[in-house]
Structures are given as C-alpha cells and as structure tokens.
Length: 224
Ligand SMILES: C[S@@+](CC[C@H](N)C(=O)[O-])C[C@H]1O[C@@H](n2cnc3c(N)ncnc32)[C@H](O)[C@@H]1O
Image (cartoon, rainbow, N blue to C red):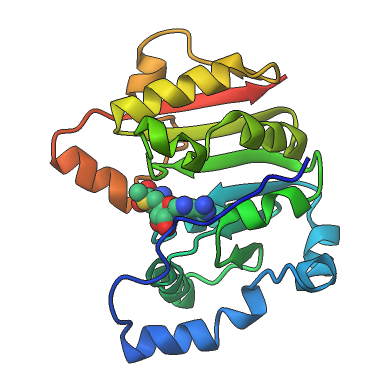
C-alpha cells in the first residue's frame, strides 16, 4: 500500500550565504538522488554497496558524515528537506570528502517506498519533529504504516535507532514501535535509553537540548 503524504517539513528558514548557495547549485548535483531517474540516477551506488544505511532528517549532517567516514564500505543515504541543513552538510564535505554518501534533499516519505527492500542495516531518526498533538498524529514519522516500510527496508537484525527530548513524542513512538510485530526494543536497563550508544555522534539539536537541561531518550529497536 502506498502512503498518501503531504509534507510538513520546512524547506528554507533564512537566506543562504553566496558560498552555501553555490554548494547547493554545484556540489549537490553529483550526490543528489532524483526519484525521476532510473535507479534514482545512481545505479552504480546501489550495485557497489551490499550494505546500506539511511538517516532521515540529518539536520546539519554531523552524524551522517561521521558514520560515512567511519564505515567506507557501507553506502549511506541522507534525507533532509531543509536546504540550510543540506548546505551545512555539503560545506563539511568540502574538508571531509567521502564517496559513499548520497543525499535526498526532500521529504523522506517521498523516497522510502522506492528504496530497495531488505538492504538496510540501520535507519536513523535523530530528534525528528515531534508532532505530539493528537490532531497531528498523521504527521508523525514513527507511525504504523511508516514502520511497515521500515520493516521492509531493514535486513533481519537491522537497527532502527531514534532519539528525542520530547516526552510525548517518546511515549507515542515507543507505543507504536512496541506494537509493531517486526520490531523489538533492545533495552534491558534504564542506562540503555538514558545514555547515548557507544557509537553515537552528538548532533547540533542534541547539544542544544542538553544545554537547556532537557532529558534525552536514546532508543534502539531491532528488526526480527
Ligand atoms: C529537530 S531537527 C533534528 C536535526 C538533526 N537530526 C539533529 O539532531 O540535529 C528535525 C529535522 O528533521 C527534518 N525533517 C522533518 N520532517 C522530515 C521528513 N519528512 N523527511 C526528512 N527530514 C525531515 C527537519 O527538516 C529537521 O532538519
């Protein structure tokens, strides 16, 4: 079943510097996934990497780039509709170039159902927009029909990792993930969700949340 979708993510908040605008018009082109093209315009990428990982809402891209550097034999795909964030990642890639990362500069929900099934070993959603109000529940990314797609994309034992500082988002997302037949929460003790995982890379949003004294919940689900 295809999910019907209208995007609620911001595209651009403030003007881009001339340098960042240039990065978007030049450096993005060879890294951009374009769903109108055959195998999104990068068939060699999908042939080259047996293992893929996806980050949804990468923000300024610090976690995505650190992962891509740490695991050069894995192909990474990052989705981010906020063009200031995409430009921040491209700026980082000027000093830290990698050849195992592609960018979908748009809403992840427009891409998910087209991605290859059973090829992903990890999906990351770090501090997704919470949409905690009940009337906004259809906008939440961690909901049953999207979890069905995540379950199809992930290999057996694949990781669905998310983090949040918004208690109402945590409650509704834990309920949705725990209710899904394909996912199992890997936490055994409170430290498993109170402490960042050992392979964690701090994100910009996380740093701000910590500075404001907000408690962060780190959640890992495994695909059966
Ligand atoms: C609170 S920010 C967190 C950014 C980053 N992960 C971090 O931790 O710093 C949420 C991000 O998710 C992005 N986002 C929201 N809806 C999205 C969607 N449907 N697909 C992809 N990204 C989305 C937003 O543009 C924003 O950059």
